[in-house]
Amino acid sequence: MQTASLKIGTRGSKLALAQAYETRRRLQEAHGLPEEAIEIVPMSTAGDRIQDRPLAEIGGKGLFTEEIEQALHAGEIDIAVHSTKDIPTVLPDGLHLSVYLEREDPRDAFIGRNVKKFTDLPQGAVVGSSSLRRQALIRRLRPDLQIVMYRGNVQTRLRKLEEGEVDGTFLAAAGLRRLGLQDVITDLMEPEHFLPAPGQGAIAIESRIGDTRIDALLAPLAHRETQIALACERAFLGHLDGSCRTPIAGLAIIDQGQLRFNGMILTPDGTQAHHVSGEGSIADAAAIGEDAAKRVRAMAGPDFFKDW
Image (cartoon, rainbow, N blue to C red):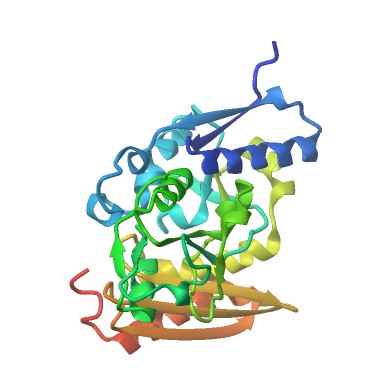
């Protein structure tokens, strides 16, 4: 039996595994490798194990990556496959986000139980969400709605919806498409009204800096436009010290060599929000994101983030 020449670390949820399988398939196609040459190594993370509290209360984004990154650092796996929006902006020493696969639809999807559109929810309806960004945007658009904390994987959230625990919920359109569940979407939220999380819809591959064998294997998978857009969005997030404690939204779009960025910060109750935009050459992607962060921070004032 052939020993796997590459080990992919991933969370164990169906969505995380679908992303790892997609990465394996692309590696097979790029290098003519048999499936058994690439091993998928599912791993449990603190974010998966702790389901009874909001992420902000237990440490934020790193909860979905820390154990996997430790295995990567120790050489127990060769690469880690993540949802980009789950990755902190500061990575452990010796590791980097080496490749982004081509981004899927970055929009949020609304799934309604008795109504199709988010705007059609009746007064006082119950919406489930664990994302502070989504909660803040919901409160900003519909302050009459009740919001309940809604943790769990995609299937768990859809089951709770079907059982009537909530009247509607939001999930990333990209995740539903990767699971073949796009038919459950009842309303796609356009970014001008419901701006997505920075990095939403993109799969990132993390590897060890200076690992030339892995760099060569991953190089054909890199999607340049996604890499450029994410450089902008993660610069925006990083300069704002974005974590699961802060409702921050941002999306970069590339068109004919130019990049357009829209960003937003909100208070958790949705009552205050500041928008910012920027544009320029794709060569300046990270600088555009950082400049937008500086400007929106100045708009918001020094006290905006202090209680978060």
